[in-house]
Image (tube, rainbow, N blue to C red; front, side, top):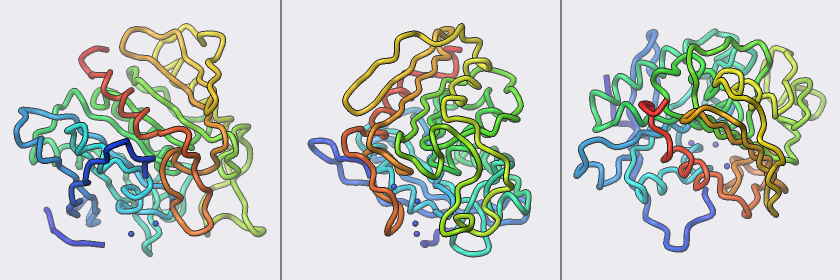
Length: 309
């Protein structure tokens, strides 16, 4: 079921030399488990002239929503520039502060055990029916809680997802091994105090969790564990030493089978924010302008097709 409606919050793109105007996002709904779930679709004009085009799902962070993800990442403009469809699904919540069920996080979606995997699967089915989506070029990215959910989607659906890009996210260490490989580009901030590079206990602010019942208390694994997890899942031999040191980042790559590669970026001067984008809220971490996560992610996605694995 679809309803055109309109509705906004945790980082845009440092714009290219000639910025393309963004296509207007259209908000729609899909009923799953008796819950009307919102999502925004940006379909570039070029998609109508092409047989099948890639699809990028962009997941907001905890306490955010679809418009917030658009504002933070600039993936709406990137979709117009590159001719793919960008979709910005929304989590659930009792208020406008929406979250994803990443098992140990976060808030309403976690405590209510919301079936977000089922929702994303149903959403993909709907998008494949309604838009010219190439089923071999479906990609998922997300920030923070959305990055955690990005991992969960790839673990649950390695046969549907061509590549993933979790940004300032983490894993907990008890995630199941996926049934197949998924290429992954992983981006974390060196100055992130919410998802620290070293891992550890849930984040706290002013003596309490960032918002009520945000976390179940399970400690985060260090950020680099995300690379280790997918190394094992993808059948990689290990790291390719030494890391690449650039002014804006350190990059670790892995010795992986063809079509199952992994890249891990640790971005300097970047906290809990989308590098090259915008802070998601007043007082939030200001992202670095020296590294454009949206451009880097799309470059990685564009090199991966499901059939190549």
